[in-house]
Image (cartoon, rainbow, N blue to C red; front, top):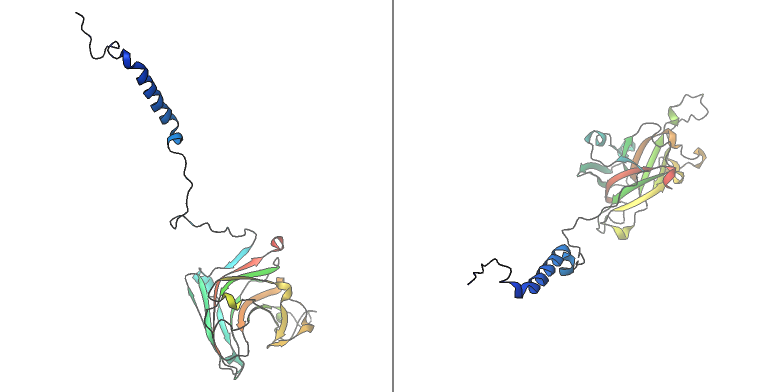
Length: 245
């Protein structure tokens, strides 16, 4: 009598085709898992990272209010220099400049913030872009317009210079904020060719257009002939060269 061990292929001979089939199926599943688990479409969730737009590499960030040394250069100019009673203050927090105060028209009726800049800063600039916000409250959303100011150095030229002037001219342009977007950040863009010359709030068209290359001061002003509080947040200010027009 012969003894067949448990590992003898003769013992399993009747079941060999079934094993081959099972083994082949297992190998196929291991080699192609997608056949057993087809890919599922990804559904975005709140945990997914939010894609942020890339900044335009051609623009120049003048300030995003995160540098304390740069922030220290901003200073207020109020109507008390001409006997007015308006109030104005500024503060920096989390990379945002906040300009607040109250206009009193019994006097000069204006409040401004200013920053001295090196000559030539705007030599290759055609536009300025700013990210701004005003509060969504009845007394603040409709204030303004706030205006952007640029000042040149022509009044400091020698008296025999053909472009010398006896007084300092301010060039201004309205910042086109939309009241219906109050409470939200708005990005506004203004052309340097739209800045109009003025002196103490009076139009001075005979002074001619702004010379960007000679600009030495940047400012924000409100003088809307309305008594009451104002509030403006500024996230950043960019210089836009011709290549991005």
